[in-house]
Length: 166
Image 1 (cartoon, one colour):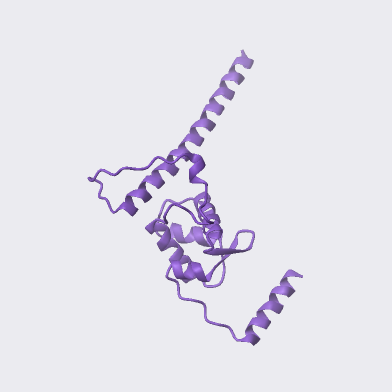
Image 2 (image 1 turned 90 degrees about the horizontal axis):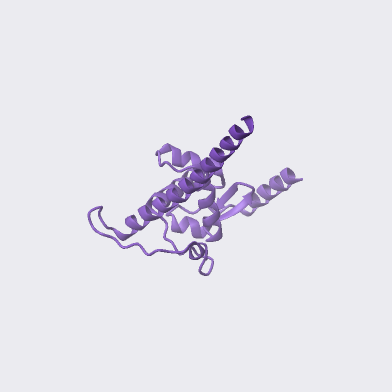
């Protein structure tokens, strides 16, 4: 009898894992549909046609650029991140911006978005989980450029960073 109960427990745990995975996929699809709706400018009453994209097509970059547009929500988040954290920022910093406006975005979404922005050239990775917004990213997200540092300040910063790395 105890073996039969263990089997039922294992079956239910497998079913829960499969349902959680399906929920993640469904949430991603909902976000994609919402992004498509926002990009189309359609109202909720207008019918919109959504082109069905296979999973293989979704992951194919075209020339290092994402084929899907950036949602207005993420555009605003990246602007805020670039404005608040002028030089460098962490995944936690990005996540704190999303939480400040109650976006419902989780850490996994933040990590995924940071990776995508890095691949598109909007961010550069400083170290594991630490990023810097590139000039391209600052332009894309309407963030004021960083002030040019004097040669002395640049040398001082490099010597400090080297001292930390050593």
